[in-house]
Length: 88
Image (cartoon, rainbow, N blue to C red; front, side):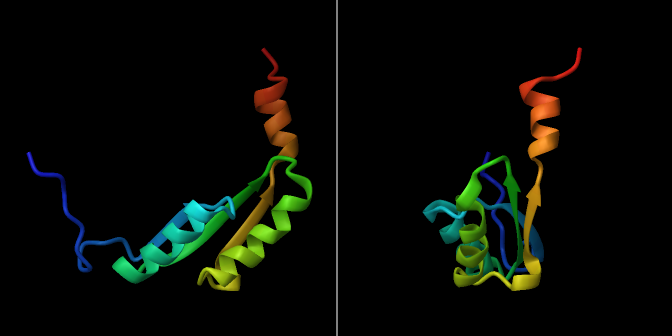
């Protein structure tokens, strides 16, 4: 069995990328745009990273993301409620 090959015509036109602001997700953002012509929407979950969260926005834009496609969501309350101290 051959793995499915993506071509420009079969590639998704819009992709949501879980974006950390690190080197790996910054490279994949540009790669998705270049290789597949995809519109990349970045999503960064704020779990309490503090000062690290806003630089992720600047890095996404610097890597080629459109400002209107960069989303940072404060999910600290949900994370603590649902995963750190879940109610049984």
